[in-house]
Amino acid sequence: MIAYNIRGSPFATPNILKFGFSIWARKPPKNYLSIYPKAIQKIRKKEKSNDIFLYALVDDVLPKVVLSRTHEEQQKISEHYINLLPNLGFHEVHLVSNFVKKTALEACLSYANGITVSEFWKLLPQSKKKFSDNLTLAEAFGFLWHIHVLKAAFDEFQLTGLLAGIRSEFFYLIARKLLPPHDVYFINTS
Image 1: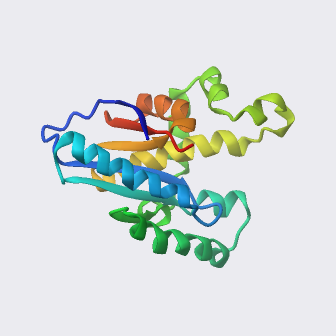
Image 2: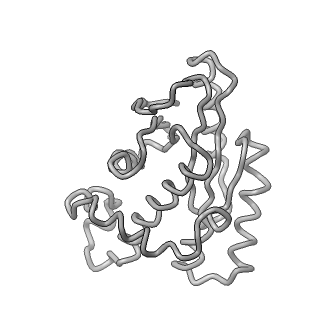
C-alpha cells in the first residue's frame, strides 16, 4: 500500500500530522479512494499516534473551467465527494472553491518560474508526450493551479504532508520544490 515516503516536515510535534489528499472532481468518486484512509491507519500504527488526520482537497474549480460546466453541473459531481469521502474515512472534505481566493491567477502563475520545461514535460502522461498536438495550455495551467491549491491548503489547514498515488510521483517531487517543507507518502493504488 505505502510504496515509500519522503520526510521533510519541520514541525516539532511529529505525533500531530495532517495529510492532504488532492483530487480533481472531474467524475464521481471511485472506490479506490478508500485506500488513502487505510494508508493513514498504517501511518498511525507506525507513528504510534491517533493524532494523524486526512484532509480531502476536492478541486471543483479547474474541472468546471476546463470542462465548461455550469455551477450546478459541477456542484452535482462535487456533492458525491462531500457525501462519500467522510464515509470512507477522510476526516475532513474541503472544496477548493471554499478556500482558494477567487482572484488566484497572479499567484498561480507566479509558480511558473520555479519549474523548467524539461520538468514539466516529465509530468505529462505518456499519451500527451507522444502526440504533442494534443497538448494544450490547460495542462500547464492545471499544474500551476494544482500547486497553488496545495499551497493554499498548507496555509489554511496547517498540513504537514500529502498522500499521493505512485503514478503522480513526479508531480509531487516537483511540488516539494515549490511548497513549504512537508512529508509525502506515495501509495500504490494498483
